[in-house]
Length: 311
Ligand code: NAD
Image (cartoon, rainbow, N blue to C red; front, side, top):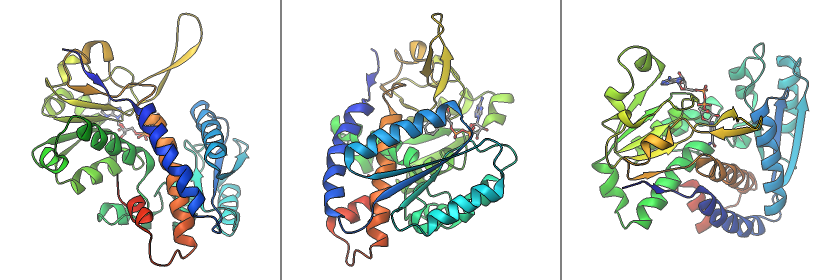
């Protein structure tokens, strides 16, 4: 048996169509995404370009801000503060990585929490950890959106599945791993977090082999191999690692060694074409939600309540 492929592109297409309708409903409230990139990191440049294209397609304004790699904390914070008071901007995304001299957490604290569409400000990170999110960070949200949609497609009852399942998250970053852990708790699954020290000591397999759902977000190509998964696991590969092929061209691979893992597991997200495309749409979805919340949308419409939920 080989794994079913969970198709992120198809899922993103369906979400995009819904988002176009959402954008039409928020007219009157300025909906705009501002991105701040410091330097020219390969992944950030590609991400910014994708967001620009997607924003145009769904009818959301995009304001890209590119700062020199030599920019310091003052310049980055001033840019954030200008955008906080710019009425055309409903969402602010600071692209990572920031240069080593710029304190990431200070920049995140400078973002107006009402425009913090990736939930990196402590207020929004706290709300998420308490199970009452204002914005659900796009990557973790996409992981669970793909899982929920896949469970629906195979006729599994979501609550029943999560209640009896063990979810193991590999990688514990503030922007991906920890939010994914919070969303696992929200679904009342049994959740375990594995980080680099497990790999350096006992090995990750001791933990990951228990997973019914294995979420991998370590940023290490080929980290998860056949011996690390159980038969019938559902594997969500968040990793994006640039690799140079024999032809000299750069292509992206995930953290999962697909060749050895696919024959063992029940379902698997590909890289590219898995979590990534859904993440892009989710971020813009949060930007629309931010516009709606800022616009004092009064009693929430049914669709805005739905946006506040994880899936
Ligand atoms: P990060 O570097 O901030 O965090 C990585 C985490 O993995 C850390 O907690 C680190 O300790 C842990 N880790 C590293 N090596 C490990 C190992 N050998 N075993 C176990 N844990 C290990 O990265 P991030 O921002 O969380 O992103 C993780 C990966 O996901 C990257 O490849 C990134 O490009 C990708 N990513 C993808 C999307 C998407 O939409 N698909 C979005 C964001 C990030």
